[in-house]
Image (cartoon, rainbow, N blue to C red; front, side, top):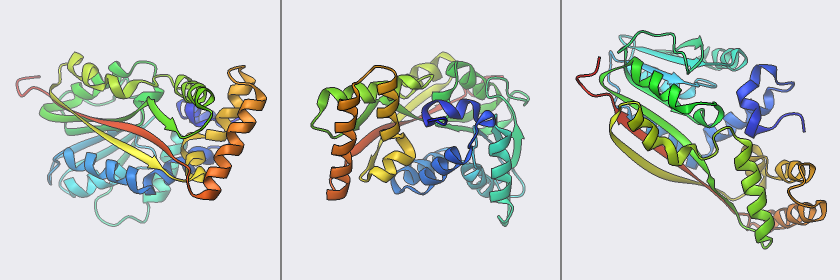
Length: 276
């Protein structure tokens, strides 16, 4: 149980097996529900040719590349990530991309290495859940956005994570254990307030649910069975209860009735036109 998706992204360059996290990102990038959330969020930036755009926590660079395609060769798209391991994977994946490509930069979202008022659109996805102070990152994104520019965040709220189970109490404990493993498991519900606190205006919140109907998918994204084992080790549930829960989920999966759901929130704010 060396690598754990809830905690490992924050220190990915120290991971013994970074492929665990790469596989998670690639799976999410192809999952139809998540793909729709991603595509919608990129479109909501309103980028046009010649714009400058920033992706904070760019991971494998897929959305940064989509932003580069929107701003074109006359514009600038930058993907920033704290993990040099992930940036190296992104550079390899994007090596065969034709047309405009994003620049990839190593950096800390809490201390963005850019001047004030540069970017027409700044986007972050599933990164604030892993940072100790999400408000500082959003403040930095607001700082580097140009007046009238868009700051957009896509984050889950792990308090909305549900798994169908007859063992209601055990399922609740496991969902809470998973949620509390993140630095900011409730970030989804806090996005609107945090954006307002850093001076963004006209904040809009869009909820979207990601429903997964297979245990394999839930393992790739949520470490569901591993979470049961970790909860046993932490004394949150008994070994027998965890074993029963895992057996139930395997039976449901085999019968085609496995169900899990998580709500993502896309928050969109504008930097005031008069801001400097």
